[in-house]
Structure formats: C-alpha cells, structure tokens
Length: 184
Image 1 (spheres, helix red, strand yellow):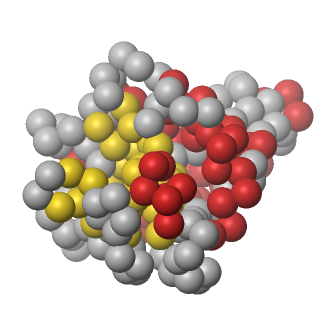
Image 2 (cartoon, one colour; image 1 turned 180 degrees about the horizontal axis):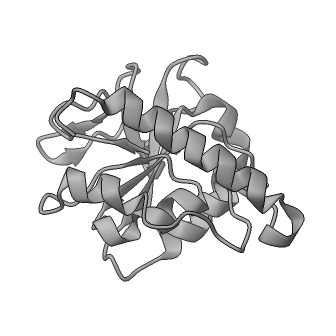
C-alpha cells in the first residue's frame, strides 16, 4: 500500500481560485473531476498521465471505456462510515480489470486499511490526524482471510494454506531485513 503525502503528491487537481477549471489545460499528472474528464477526454492526447476523482455515489461503470487512458482513479470517502467507495474499487479491480492506481481520499482512517487493501485500493491519502506508523501496522493485523478478495480471489478451501503461510513468513522476513538499520 502506498501512502500519499499531499504536500509531495505528483497529482494535482485542475483548479483555479473559484474551484475546478471548466476546460483545464492538458498536463501530465492532472487529477480531474469526473465532469472535467468528460469535458476534455475527446481532445486530450492519448498517453497523458491523467487521473479522475470519482464521487462515491457514481456508478463506476461510466468509466469503463475510459479506463485504458487513465493512470489513476481516486475514490472519495466523504465520511468514514460511508463505504460505497469500497464497492467502486472492487468493481474497478475485479470486473473492469483496471490495472492503474486506485486511491482512497477523504475521511480515510487507519482502521479502514485492511479492507481498503482487500477491495483493490493500492494507495491512500490518510486523514490529517492519522499516523503513518499506525497505518503500516494496521496492514499487518491479519495473517489471512477465509474469503477471497482482489489480492487472492480464491477462498481458503481452494488454496494451499500451508504454502501460503510459508510464503507469508518469507515475505515478512524479507520485509524485516529490508527495514534493518532504519530504526525500526
């Protein structure tokens, strides 16, 4: 999981003093609202790194034909109790096979991270009061799950759980070795 620092993010909203620009200029790493994207997609160059910020009440299928052109889909959590963006991420990954970055924005809390990861998010911008070290620990809370998800679609009964445990232990050991000397 990638953690986004909003002060060092490559992606920038196409905004002016009065809010989103009606017809933003074509720039690499532009994060557009869905309305902006629909306004410019016909005349923006193919191959430009572009992202779309999607409200959580939008049917994600509206992006089906545009996904090959998008590098980022940012899904919004207006409240931490509103989980519709989980479903959007799951549809993007499992049904639409989107391979770009799926980012969680808004009221994203540490407690949400395991489910964010299981539903297809690979990047998050935590709410300002959330701590990065707590977020990283939250991703290690559960060693495995019975149900399938976007990371491992097979349920537990269809997997070799012993082999999974051995592979997970090896991954944890490599991770610990890579962090050695970093004060962790």
